[in-house]
Each structure stands twice: as structure tokens, then as C-alpha cells.
Length: 163
Image (tube, rainbow, N blue to C red):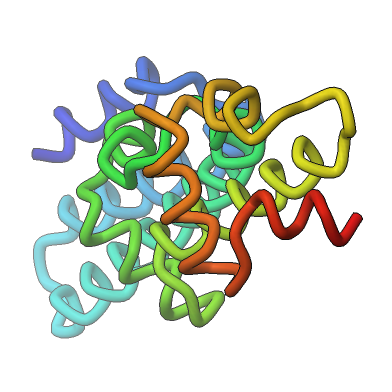
């Protein structure tokens, strides 16, 4: 198992910064060293703590990447599954970690980011509601309007009139 993990540290699924790679590699080295110890009464505790630390390091890499992906792709991708697939984690694990850290699920964060994009587009007088729906990759104007009203309490047309 350690060899498998170590191979993926050297050649990860997603490119890692050198500093991230070094932090993960040090955890894998600690695991390997701990496993090689023959008589250590605290071996299990050492392994558990090292694995916990490794998992935290991995999440320290994944969460900023999620936030970056969300801000750069929320116009085009509205589902948690797409982001989870990009980060090689399950949608449930991603949402649970975000909920624990930010108090919001991945879906809530994506929706908030999408609403901000929608507001910016709607406040531009050159854009119609239909144009904004198309720019934000909604299937049609009605689904965009329903989404927008659910989060903002007013329809996109009302927001444009108020502006």
C-alpha cells in the first residue's frame, strides 16, 4: 500500500506545487519509516496520527483548488459532481469538508458564486435576461429565472428594473 501511495505522490493525478509535493512526501516517508519499525508499542497510534496528518495535508491542497475552480468555472459547471471529479474526491466528501470548514456545502458555495456572476451580468444594460441565462449555461431562461428568484427573492427582470 505504501508503495502505491508513494508512486502517486511522485506522479499525482493532479499536478501539485513543489511545496505540496514535499509535504505529502514527508508524510509518506514517515509512514514507511513507522511500518519498518519492528518493536514499537505505539506503532498503531503513530500510524493513525501520521495518516490523519496526511489526510489534512491533502485537504489543504484540495480545498483551495476547489475555490479556484468554482470561481473560474461556475458559469459553465453548476454541479458538485463536476468539481469533485476534477479534484478526484467524492461529491459527498467535498461537501462534508466544506460544510465543516465554511458552514456551507459545495452546492451552496457554487450557487452563491453563480448568483454573483448573474448579478454582475444583469446589471449590465446591454444584457437581457435571456443573454445572461445563455452566458451562465442554463438550459433556458425559465430555469435561470427560477434559480435566481429562489436565491435572491426577486426575478432577474425585477433586479434589472431596480438597477
